[in-house]
Amino acid sequence: MRGVNAILKIKDSELDEVADMVVRYSKQIENEVRKLSNQWGIPRDLKEDLIQQGYIGLLEAHKRFDSSKNTHGFWSYACHTVKGRMKDFMIYSISHIRPTRELNSIISKIHKESMMHHSPEYIANYFNCTLEMADLGLEYIRIRNVKSLNQSLSNVDSSEDLELVDLIGAEENRDYLFRVEVVGELSVIEQGVIKMLLDRFSVRDIIRHFKISNHTLNDILKKIANCCGYDCSHILTRNEGWLMNLNHFDLADGEEKERAQLRWVPLEKVLPNPENPRIDAAVKSEHLQDRIESFGWDEPITCYEWGNNFRIISGHRRWHAANELKLEKIPIFLVAAPKSRGEELERISSVQGGQVEWSPFDQIKYTYDRWIASGRNSFESLGSELGISKGLARSRIRVYEYYPPGEIQDKLNNRMYSVRMLEYIYTWIKRLAKYHPNLVEALGGEHYIRRLMLKKYEARCFNSMLVHDTFVTKATVQVIRDFLINTNKKLNDYQVNVTDTFSVEINSAAIVTEIRDIKVKTKSEARKLLGEVDEVLACIERKKAELESLI
DNA sequence: GAGACCGGTTCTTTCAACCC
DNA sequence: GGGTTGAAAGAACCGGTCTC
Image (tube, chains in turn yellow, cyan, brown):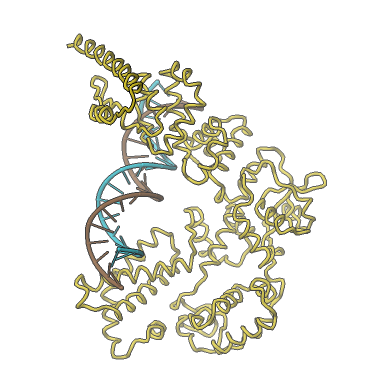
């Protein structure tokens, strides 16, 4: 509590009351942490930090709470501050990225084995995961690398049973002390400098990143030193090349290690891989350019030799960023060439982190390419190869085969369409072609109907319940045609519900509503409509006679 | 009145069992 | 092996409530 007291300036006379409150609401705070933890997949060490933040929020709310104004009790008032504190902390600690289940698993393993300081390649090899997954895990841990005030300092020689909070004001262990929130007195740039120092960036990297002079940086470091009360001159002597992790590759496979080489090669000799399913290498390019400019290359591009050039297996976005920056030379990590197209596709997928950042369309294209490369194997075996269900494998292939890329690519990638919905539409159209081939022909083929259906989906004329639709098999050609060509008409307005084999219900309310809503303005419209009404009446008379004959 | 939060509802996605 | 269907989980949405 000492650190918390210092932050909130709690008077000694209030300590008992505050202690009671902390005990009373500890369960609620733990519940909130549990909820957030389930939602975000927070590692155990960060949960303690969240609980700390909850207590701080509780104390802040306590200071503001006015029982005469708030009749719903203290907790209903305080819970917002508590949750707000926790969420702010999470946003600061883990940014906006929500890790996937697989990534979370890797992060937990890295924590458990204390492998934060190993190279991505070593971790990928150790945990048998992809290189990009290991890299993402490390990145995630780096941005979450905030120490708990109550974190044990057992790894610090002189600190038996001490917690970080106990080191506030102590003389040793400068790096730990920088992390404590005394930085609140510093400017944004000064806090940024501290963060980079703690993350082991070199002085040169800091100067380049903030675009400041050596002299300015020295002034900032002096201010930080004065503020914290420490001499940080030792940091200034850090090895300038520390950030270049290029000598950190620690492959377990001896043979592979011999074959793998690191080289700096002219940019024009590095060629993109046509098998790369990622269509747009410019995704997050500005961020990568900024990172390369600020911090240098923290990971080379993985390539294999291709004649006199090098073909990329992993790193198309970094290659694109290097082109944008007009760099002359870039670092590559040279590996053995794949023996077949199938192996090449598999390796591209493997090193690109299980397609974590692939767009939906990239995933579809990749699944289709793998299927073709495998000689059109069963969806089941393809699914098991890719780690997806056979149903999803089938959906992706079917969608890629059926829809022209131009029709779906953008809208798939911005999540307006889903693979499943596109497959439902495909199935619906195929049913239409089976039960009403003449209508499909009359409308100029499936191509036109497909575009109409996509338009109708965008206009929310139907949803995933399309998969259970019986309208397409039961309705008349005229009604289906009407549904298709009226882009705003909803499927619900037309749907016929077949409740069982022997009973059919007509959505009479919808039909009556639709008829009532019809409005005509001219005589010719009225004449045309009369003709259609006659047709409907004739249809009804026929159906009536048919039903009466059954009674 | 604006904004944050909560709980209920609806929609979407995925998976697996079952059927042809 | 491929297609269909239902269950379950997650995401998105919406209206009500509360605080400032």
